[in-house]
Length: 357
Image (tube, rainbow, N blue to C red; front, side, top):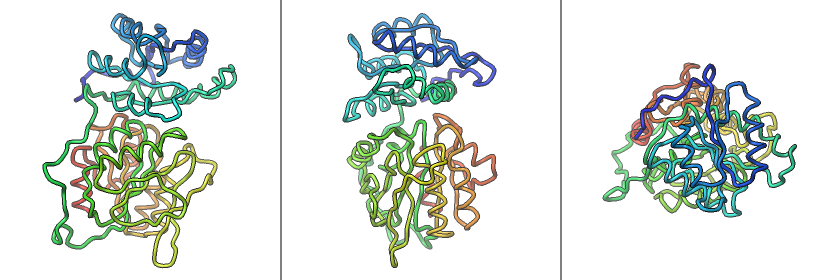
């Protein structure tokens, strides 16, 4: 449920930010990085979650950046309590634990995005992420928030597709691109697919290296589909969903009558790796008109060029409606380019995919 609060204009309004980190040095550097933008003002800093709750109540910031590992109250506990009292866009910025469990827990609790802090605290290393930090804070300022993030609603009985459910299938693969708000969105969508879903699904979710494998495992536990992080040479088959690994593009290669996954760091000139555009273009090249592309919540325009490839080959494009997007950036870029066949909310996305399959 959206809290209905108006977000500041991301171009003309000043975004008021609260920085939360147990390191005084990092708080100072974060403040310097954020205030390089004329549209960002750091209104306060906090040493832990308990202090942050007090300052957030008093200062009412537009965005909060928050570390995970802190004394008194850690980042996950802070996100849960803050979102339960007064939802505020929270960007997690941390050197996460090796397992990444805390990052996923924070996103599940309602944090809108995550930026990995360099392990070395040298000034030049922190400044390397300055532009990305400002971009994520600006995107977060316009994010829609839920007091309770989208969750899986267990069905009373597993969905099964009867022979008459899909009369004349025109799709061989569903490719999905998503970014900011993606972990919550995929967690709400993918478990709705039945085990006998007749086509394969491939997904690009922009996450830092080290998190996609863990996220795919968790999604698999919730789903009737087999969900896995894609590996080189994986056979692309119905009833399975493949998540592109962070740091490598996912594309398709024909091997006889089959299609397999191919992973590569190339092309090198994309804004993201993996890129939605790369997955979509490869799907169009490999499957022709029998592709359904889906662009969901996220900032930027990744997926727009790939959507053009899919449409040029005769495939279909779906976009998530603005009403359910955390950030209506990627879907907007596809819609405004005239490439979306239909837009629908996250709640009805599965039904629309099934209808148009």
